[in-house]
Image (cartoon, rainbow, N blue to C red; front, side, top):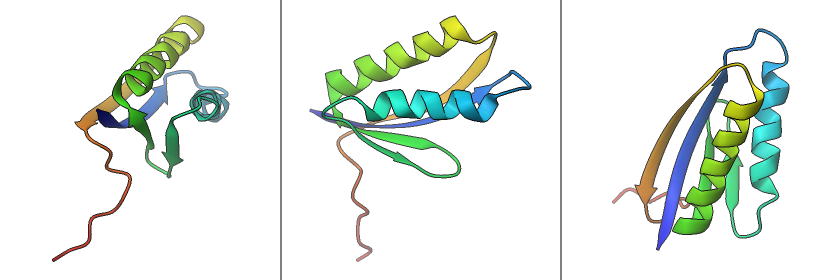
Length: 88
């Protein structure tokens, strides 16, 4: 089973927030088997369900352990939604 996960990370630190976001994204990009797509509003992760969910949750835990405070907004959608569906 595949999953699509959309993640937005909002560090509540006033300094280095961009570097923290990019570090989070880069760690996910190094996981074999995950497709990671980034735009100006969020990051999307596509892949096998257990692989994707386990790594995303581990990275969220890592951020919470290393930053004073951070907010994550996530959507989990069953199936791989990486391909845009054509309108009929």
